[in-house]
Length: 184
View (tube, rainbow, N blue to C red):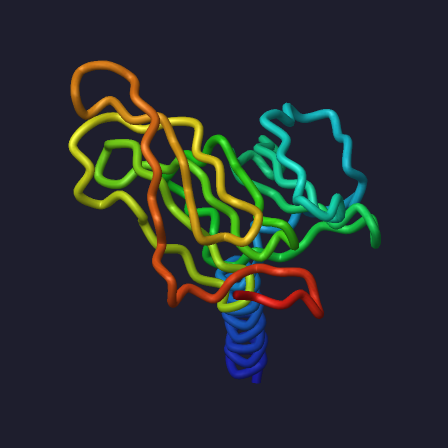
């Protein structure tokens, strides 16, 4: 009787241990590191730098070291809350120099791809990033996106010196324009 009682307690203990382990794993895998944990205050005790304001003055993008990660965050000044940007921040990359389109739909920034800096664009509407300069031969820095999101300018060093580069995303790109604005 004592042996069967001991086995039952051991089985129950192992079962609960497995349940807690699986729950912990699930929570760790599904946590969203794009939005700061805890306080939703704009200012914190961590380093925040490189602020960029959307053309309409509503959204603020900046680089922060919150959550022990170097990450690009977007803050809604109107609702005083952080905006989720799934897929923007990756664990093994560094993100720098954000720039926002007029309504904050598009965010261009410098990140690294296979160890070299590239200009990338994040679309908040479809929550996807794309590298805009995958084949650029040289270093890049300081991107800035036009208010409508069609053009991106940046400094490039493809000729051994820093030059201004203009990238046209094309006439078919969905523009970030204020509601009700006519587009020619």
